[in-house]
Length: 86
Image 1 (cartoon, rainbow, N blue to C red):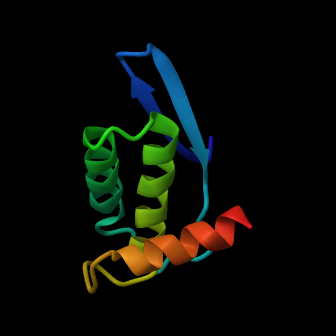
Image 2: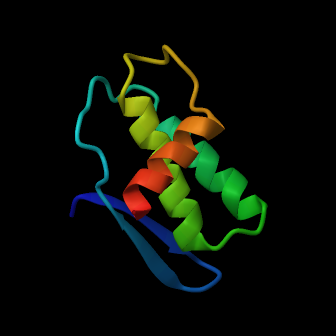
Image 3: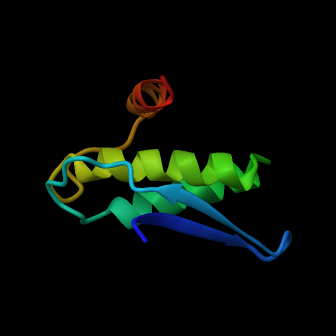
């Protein structure tokens, strides 16, 4: 399975998001970025599918840089989402 899986114990359901990255420079911090965005999204009341998608976008942005060279920002997330959803 390529991509990510989120399990909701509340809904007793799995949510899936396919692999979205085409280029990987470094994996350091990608999981941290993903989990942070998923946690914030779920705590804000977003549904699991949207939270997982946004977390995956954050991971993509992290994969584009070496180590923790730069932060994931809203503009880059929105640009990636717009590109992928066209």
